[in-house]
Amino acid sequence: ATHVASSATLVSIDTALVHLCAAMQHHVRLLLPLFSDERWIDLLQTGSSYANVCTVLRQRQFGCWQPLLHLLALSLSNQ
Image (cartoon, rainbow, N blue to C red):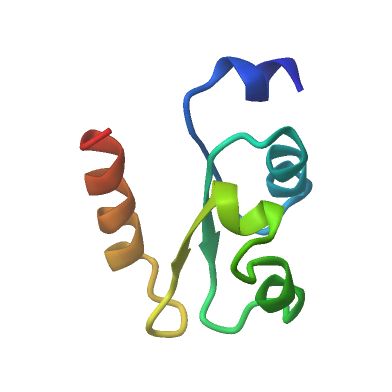
């Protein structure tokens, strides 16, 4: 929790770290595969604590992470 609080923005895949960030109201960029766990649909509904802190970057093509990582790099460089 100390490391989360000391960082400006965290980047994570589908891990417990995202849940910790949501509980702490700390901004996180969430990388999701094209076919992710269905619970993210419910957790990221407008108005939820997750939706307020998570920026979701989802694959558009199965197994293709490069465009997503490029977008992530651009968004982090514009902070």
